[in-house]
Length: 495
Image 1 (cartoon, one colour):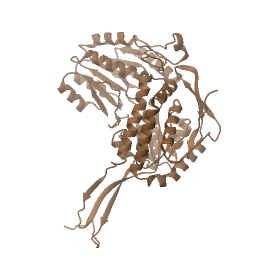
Image 2 (image 1 turned 135 degrees about the horizontal axis):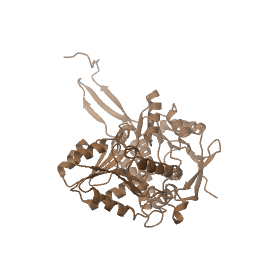
Image 3 (image 1 turned 45 degrees about the vertical axis):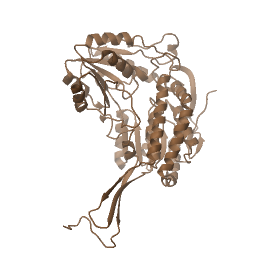
């Protein structure tokens, strides 16, 4: 009998009002049923939003340092349960255990960072232009935050959003991806155990069209934070624009790693293998394009194919597995469709390009790591986000051409350059159009205390992580205190 899970609304675990459920299965072994979860409706969303709205008045008045104390307890509980969370995360979404442990650690780091921000929600005091008058700007919470998150980082990304939202004094209605509802449930259980009051955090499982957009469009949701595809992000932005609701969008990527002829090729090889095939390529920061200087192109491609063909596919809970499954059958089919597109466009398939069905792999959604060479700028496999283990290799003659190719998509999330030339490094940092640039490191990887996000169709300018996210989840109030005991008129010509 599979475990049955529930929504969490106003401090209570409860079924969806309509009584419907959906299944969550292990993508490495589709016969393994992780559990059943509520398939919620607008009625459940309404109840969750009402609970959050009612809880807001008390939570916003809780001193920020005390909210930070709760975040510290959350971090402590996550440390204690790290292995358990990581194993269940691997089971429900597939990436290898070393990666899911890192996913949980990112949440731990974010919790401790948030706890310290409770004593450091800095604002500004400035001198007034008038005598006996004090002027300052302070940060205040906004209200109820709608949080909609993806499946590929089912602990890290929700914590990037929920912890700052709570620390700033907002309440939360949280819809996780339907592919990773158990990790979300474990996170909310920890928040409850740490002492978050009833109604402050509410968890509603279900589909994006009903629950996700129900949260986005709800009149009592005051701001939205969403991570997912650029197509869905545009729909959400359009909806929020109708009511001028603040929205933070972290969207797609088509990230590239440049390798120059003076680079440490062994280091660059490790970088692209990790960037392209870590998380089975299912990262917004994944290295989906490899831009190689013509002088080292053939040698590096030979090195790359030999290493790629040695990567071991399998259940991420098993030791020595390098690459897990695609998250579901639909993603596997998408990967294969793009392989056919690449072939039709004239790119040369060097390895992979098919589903892996050997032995136990046939029980899951495994796709062989795939490399195309002869890829030209403008090909669909070079332009469009695939979100799978498919790497396009492009040959260039110099750094200028490499940067032109790298910048030549609608996305601008992450970027990477391997070189020993410090001048080239700084030129790339200046000229690459991306929110993140790595020098001599892969395109993937984030640190909790630094901003994360991109430009162009990768997002709408807001950043996760670091200090900027606290600016999104709070708003400025300007305060004037006049102790002159007389009418003083600002913005009147007093000169």
